Structure formats: C-alpha cells, structure tokens
Length: 317
Image 1 (cartoon, rainbow, N blue to C red):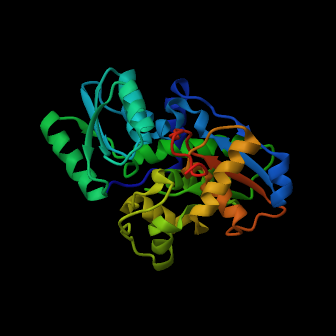
Image 2: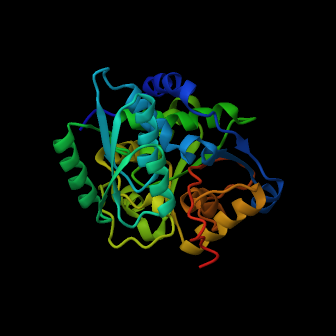
C-alpha cells in the first residue's frame, strides 16, 4: 500500500488544481436552519466542473503524471470516470473508463462528452478492478483509482479546505458522504490541519454500510451484495488506505434510511433551489433522521455532485 497523503500534500494539490476547477460556493437556508436548530453551510460541489467533487482528485492525479504519459484508465460508477476524462482531455491523454452496466445514462453521456472511452462490466468491485487491470495491460495506460490513491485523496481534501476557509465562523461538525472513502479521507486530513476541533462524521446508506461496520469493528469490511440504494455514488467498499485514515481520525460513521435520503434530497431541491444527486443528500439525511445531533452547532455539509438522472427521481418512482 502506498503511504497516505499528508496535510501538505493537500495544500500542494490545491495550488496545482486551482486554475482548472471552480471554487464552489457555500449556500445556506434559513428554513433548514430553523428546522434543525443549527447553522448549516452547504459546500456545493454539484456546481463543480463535471458536476462533481471528483474532478479535484482526478485533476490532481493527472497533473502529477510525468510528461511522457500517454493514457489513463480507471473504474468508476460514474463521477470519477467523467472527472478523469475531463482531466485527461486537458493534457490530451487518452482515457479508458470501466463502468458498471447499471450506471445511469446521464453519467455515461457525461463521460462520452469529455472524450472518454467506456468499457462496461458487471456491477461489482471485483469485476471493475479486473476489467481495469485488463485495460491497463492492453493499452499501457496509467491507472488512476477512484479513491485508493494518495494523489486522489489529496485532491478531494481541497473541498474541505475551501469549506473551512469560506465558512463565516469556525465549524463544529463536518458531514461527508462515504463510498470508497476518498472524500472522507481527504476531509479528515484537511480538518486535522485547518479545523482540528471540528468533528468529522461520515454518512452512508443503511443498505451500503461497510464503512459503519468497519468503523465499529476496526476491520475492513466488504460491501454486501447486491447493493440496493438510490445513492448509487457510494456503493463501493473502502480501500485499506481510506479505511486506515477513517479509523484514525473520524469521530463517527452513521447510516441513514432510503426514505431519509429521498426526503433530504427533495428538501435540498426545494429549499436551496439546486439539483443534487441522492448521494449528496446523505449529510442532511443524517440530520433530519436524528443520527447526528446538531442543535446550536455550525455544520458544514459537502454536497458531492449533481449528476442525477431526471427520469429516475426517487419521489417520482
């Protein structure tokens, strides 16, 4: 296993990628503050280039490659694939993206729009990794994993750096969705340097609870298949690197129901007037379902992405 990134790696990543990404805004809602008794600050990575925070890690990794690099490859449920295709296009590199056959048409279309070449596979981590390894062997591309890479984790941590810096007062709690753990790991490292008193809490669906099980047992857990959650962006199990950082620095990992995810997603659409995908709603779902006590606290919530399939909204099914 490669060594995890350090806080200074996140600072270097921020300087490296800043000219190529958006510094996304923080939004607030008086009605949500009133309903929760807290001061909520939403970091809107749904406004990010490619519609997701994933462009941060992908761009940092691609810009860190040697000058003679010719191609990159990865496996992804959608957002990392689009981010890597986008970043590869900046350097005029070929991008080979292994994606599960169950991924939404919206995410496939985004990858193709950025010039990525899609290779479909079964919707399991083993199938994704096997297909990606085969592509790397056949093309000579450099593998850029979606989360198990110090360059990717450092890039993802830059979202938390901005959230902490742009909040009008010190934050007490940071709530972060958890899938493979790249964003959580980066947030934990960033917070340890910039907001050491803030509690960082990961949130995942009850139907995809490997991080919560691992946090309790201190043993890396597999994802239980099949995964049946509307939050399709967080269905991947954690890696040894992201798991180690989680166990070292996280305050807690909580899980939320499918009903809470859908309700939180709808509230964000209605109250903030913005489009987010179900995975983005996990932090607010944890608050609305009472899994995290926030009354009287200043809370930062990372809205991870907005690449939603408008034909498959959870409240219209």
